[in-house]
Length: 496
Image (cartoon, rainbow, N blue to C red):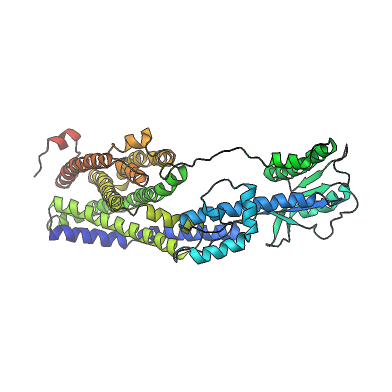
């Protein structure tokens, strides 16, 4: 036992002393930091500016009211998601955002505005939110109405307006929330509503279909109302009729059945499976390279004078497993630290994802499949090292093994996110070489205990058989250095 631990410690020190290990260890945190900084520094701020010139002054307020309605609906959706995540139950007539996420009606939006709107809701959140909850960040307005920029002509008709507006459509303009691209210019003539009168719009070359449609709908509604009034319709009765909404109840999937729930609960286990794949490829390659160097330099002969081949095999497995644990511990520690110390979209996603795998049963299963997967794949690398006399030989064996292991991972990830209980994830869960990845990816979204236990037992049996075969191969390669080993000879060979 002492000899085996000495081999493991030596293997661990050799791998950890390499520069490539330090680079790989710090690479993932560096990529995370750089990606976050690049998103914050390079991603343009959300929202586009809109200029509306209304020659009569009667129509622009209606269109801007539509923009305000959409902005309040967007804020209510963000408030509802925040309240649901942090179990906040607001009170009062304007607390419609505490009733869960749904399509907010104009009546609910009016009640929200009458109760103080977003400032009142933020005050309610500050009073009710848990200490660990971050401050609510209202969604940025997608449409920002602004007055015409300096130099834009508004009193000489649509042609002069469009010509003077064109240079501003190619750059950012000043808005109350900072510089934003000017996405749309609208000119409503004074005779709008009469035959032949046309509303003209100018875009920046990337027309926002939803924005254009919102303006068109409001102006069309005004024209319809004017036509109905001219035809002698009772406008009060018409308003009451238009206020009627179909009695529709939107049924959301129960907790555990929605795609968002599946994505959230599958994210962390799927990330762990991905980290398992990366750490296996790297640590296995380091172990393989070290083993081949020891064989080529005749160092194994000196080592075998002190330890048995089995002790050398088990020691190397323990050493590479320790290397993998260090890598995963550093990466997970960085992720957890970022989740609870950095505010933003990533941290808001990581916190509930961590909670989703807090069950002792899920944690135990994740640990088992992680360790079992590490042992199963590491022994394949050892087998390659046992039959290879050079790195070139090892590369010939290793390339197809890596392809067989890594290529199905993309299919596993895609299938788990779409349907964790689909045919492909369930089939791969019973193939030992893929079971660690498939089961780890599925555990967050719920797997039947009988399936976890059955797949785990099959994986344990596979590791036991693999250990016997690799042990024989390892012993034979050390005792018959320079001689080719056939599969039939390996199977006939008895354990010493």
